[in-house]
Image (cartoon, rainbow, N blue to C red; front, side, top):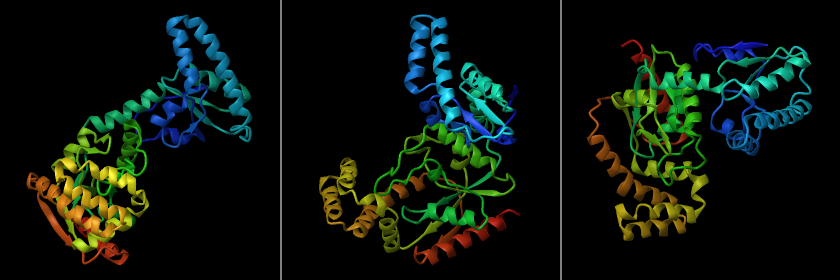
Length: 354
C-alpha cells in the first residue's frame, strides 16, 4: 500500500487516482473535503462520538476494539453497495482526519481485495494546511480589480458573462452561496468556513497571475463567512470599474432576480423588521405593506433609494481607491447585460498589456 504526500495545491496529485474516498464521518465531510471526494464514512457521527467517549472515559483499548468492529461492519456495507461494480484496475485514494486508523483500516480491506489503494499522508489535515497556507500566507500574486456599483446593477450576472467571454473572475457570492443584501441576504444555506476556503483556493489556482482578475466589491464578510486576509487586503486596495444603470431598470432587475425568494411574504416582512432601528417604523411598515400586496418593483425601488443607495454612498466616500473606468447601461435586460459584459471583457483584455 502506498502513501501520497501532498507537496502543494497546484499539482492536485489526488486527481491521479480513480476515486478519492473520504472515510470521515458525514459531519466532518460536510464541513470540508478534498474536491471531488466520495463520502464513505466508516463511522457515523453518532458512532464517532461514542468511540471518543469510550476512549477518554473508559479505555483506549476498549475504544479500539469497538471501533474496529464498527469500521469493519461499515466497510463491508460500502463494498457491497458503492464499490461492488469496481473492476480490478480501480485505484482509490483513501483519507481520514489525520491519515491514521480509519483510513488505514479501510485501505487494508480494499488492498486485501486486490485494489491498488493508497492513503493520504497526514490525512485531511495535510490538505487543509496547504489550503490555509495558500489563503493566509503570502500576498495574493494577482492583479485584482473590483467591479463596483449600486445595488441592483447586476454585478454578479456580469461576472458570469465576463467569465463566459474569457475574462478572469472570482464569484465570491457564488462560492459563498449568498445572494447579496437586497431583499434578504441568504437564499440557500452557506458552506462552512473551511468549505468556502477550499472552493476559493481552487478558484484562485485556476487564475493566471499575469492577467487581471475581476471581483465584485464586497465587505470582509459575505453572510456568515469571512474573506481570508490576503484576499481582503488585495481587494481593499484594488482599483475599481464602476457600473451604473437607471433606477427603474435596477428595480425591475431586483424584482426579477429575487423572484424565487420574495414569494414568502412573511419572511420578507420579518427581514424588513430588521431595518426598523435604521429607517423607523413608518417607513418599514410602508415597505411591508408593499410586500403584502406584492408590489415588488416599487418596493425594490424604494429600498434602493432610501436604504441601499445611501449606505453605498457612505461606504464609497471612505474608499480612496481609484475608479479606472465607468460603464453606464441603458437597461439591464439580457441584451443590455451582454453588451455591458463585452465592454468589461474588452477593457480587461486591453489592461493585460498595461
